Each structure stands twice: as structure tokens, then as C-alpha cells.
Image (cartoon, rainbow, N blue to C red; front, side):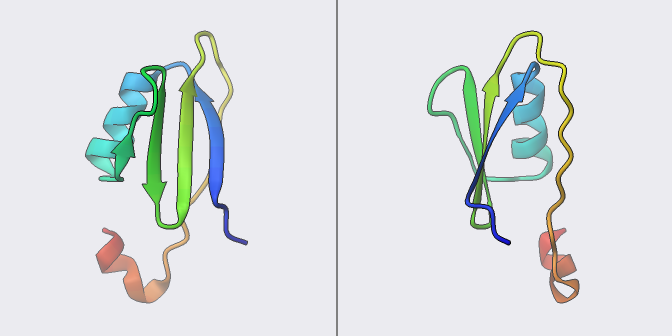
Length: 72
């Protein structure tokens, strides 16, 4: 299955941006001040700042065994 886009919430947008943009190096865009979007392969991860949000997400990136070095 390929996901084209995910719409997610966060209570900590600045920290999330630092992680996905600066640590993982994903291409970043901010359509509005309270949002952040990141391109991960063919998928778009779109986060909206939601004060008080306490949910937890867990998702993984599938990296083929012959492309681990490129992913790192």
C-alpha cells in the first residue's frame, strides 16, 4: 500500500519541524503558520498544530534492504 498523504496533529510544531527537517532532512513547506508539511518519498506528511493535543502516532518508513545507505 502507498499512502499519498497523511493529515496529523501535534501540540509541538516547532520541535516537530526541527526533527523532520533538520534531523531527518525531509523537504519542508509551511502552507500556513500553524502547519508544516514534509515530503517523504511519494507521501506527504501534513501536520497541524493543535494546542492540547495528546495523541501518539507511530508510523515507519519502509526502506528496501539494498537502499539503506542512501536512506541514511
